[in-house]
Image (tube, rainbow, N blue to C red):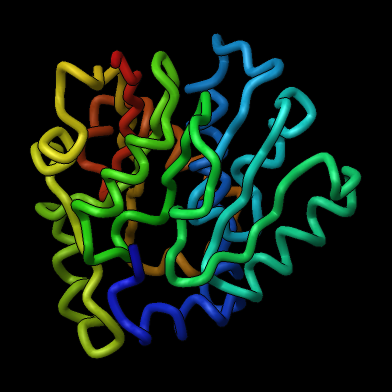
Length: 234
């Protein structure tokens, strides 16, 4: 499974372009906290596919038996290594720099598989989801984040950034087709992502508080992104 184009890989070689505003990452962290609030992660194996700098999964490292961080971006893996080194002995956790074969060399299965900020940047959908499902242990969790194809912001961004590369947006129906029952059960989903004009001029703390409030309101379904939590039945 490979990224859609060389342009995708080149973009993600420049972390400063998309890590300067952290409220979106903090929003994902918050939603993962809700997802795992009643889940015992002690002794479990977690795979973070498309891990970035490790911000989403490293908070759970102390509870896990093993955490595997995977990404194609060399600079992002380097940031992840630095974050791991600050708090843990490197030998306790696997930090893997992926080549274009991505998930093919990872030892299955995992109790939790995270695919956050990943699926919209991969064109070979079938291959990606087949690998994610294969890597999830029976009774394990597969957590997938995607940008909604029918949201006005994602349609606009697809048009604005088409010269950079074409992202793959999804409908909920697309995700359910790619992760179908009866082998997988959709347990819950969370909507988030509420942009407004001039957001870049506001502090991250304010933007996070606003997005968190909206994600828990009756307006939640209007978010640009969604996180679905699946359990593997068989």
